[in-house]
Amino acid sequence: LKLGMMASGSGSNFEAIAQAIADRQLNANIQVLIYNNPAAKAAARAARWHIPAVLLNHRDFASREALDSAIVQTLRDHDVEWVIMAGWMRIVTDVLIDAFRDRVINIHPSLLPSFKGAHAIEQAFTAGVKITGCTVHLVRLEVDSGQILMQAAVPILPDDTVETLQARIQVQEHRIFPQAIAIAAQL
Ligand code: GRF
Image (cartoon, rainbow, N blue to C red; front, side, top):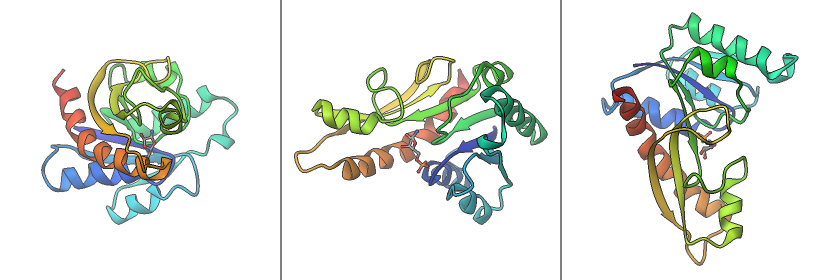
């Protein structure tokens, strides 16, 4: 599988997927990392793995569609088959989704369809639910929708803070994301 990764932040999921490939748990290659935020730590991780990283700063584009056109071009330039959004914090448009139909995958830190959007962990915490988790799903135009590939449950413990909960959710993200990519490729 030729993967194109998209990340905005720390890139720990990028790292987990790169490691799963190195460990031969996932038969794939990361062709390129696209990041939108110059400060994203994901870029330094890509350099350590000798994976090309391309900065497409959303502030340099007039519209979401213009950014997505540049993303599609970059993905095509690197011969990408599957688009993996690993903490990509921008809403994507049909420009990307139509170019890679049913081949865009996202990870979200809740048990969808609960707690969509950018503050899922805080919302689960505030709602007082006792179990939350993470979801890997195909991307549709409607945010955090689309076919669910894999989920993992994470209990919310009495002593949890948003930070400790997030850390435990991330452990599960790193475990299921590589597996879910393999599942998607078999659909
Ligand atoms: C993850 O928690 C993911 O669920 C959310 O953004 C976070 C990215 O983390 N969409 P990282 O950059 O992979 O460390």
